[in-house]
Length: 180
Image (cartoon, rainbow, N blue to C red; front, side):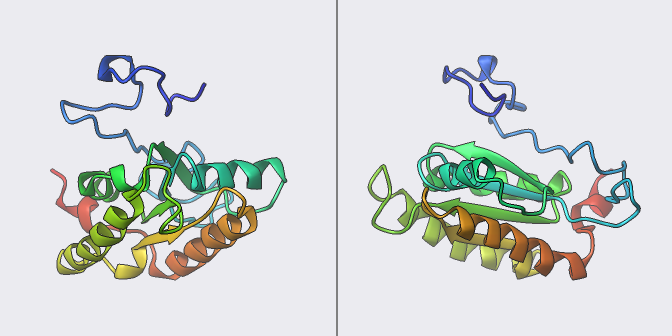
């Protein structure tokens, strides 16, 4: 069992809650050097946080791993019950914690396990895009994608494409400079 998938719904039993709102802890991966974002070989790699629907995208990511597909290892994947459950605060907190990009991925519209969750995702994505642009975050740093559980090659391609798209932008310093 992963620390990101507690069996009970209690925040006290969940290793990924923080504070009273239950936001996931999104610390940079241990492969990155502190405060530099550089890997051990000295090359900067973007730190990407992905929120993945349990029923589709997470299954696609799992299939990509089981199929031994090669894709950049710099994404921290957070499994959520549905992409529609990704609170905009999660996206803001990911950027605040140092993410260089955020991906919200779920089932294709019309295929949601819960019926309409991905329609909420689509509406929130448009609003979050505008909010982040207003706040000074490059819109290329935030993406929403639809990836089915059987689309492991698409998951690999999305992660690779996002990494290549963010790498020229450099580290996201917006919130790092604001923090006291």
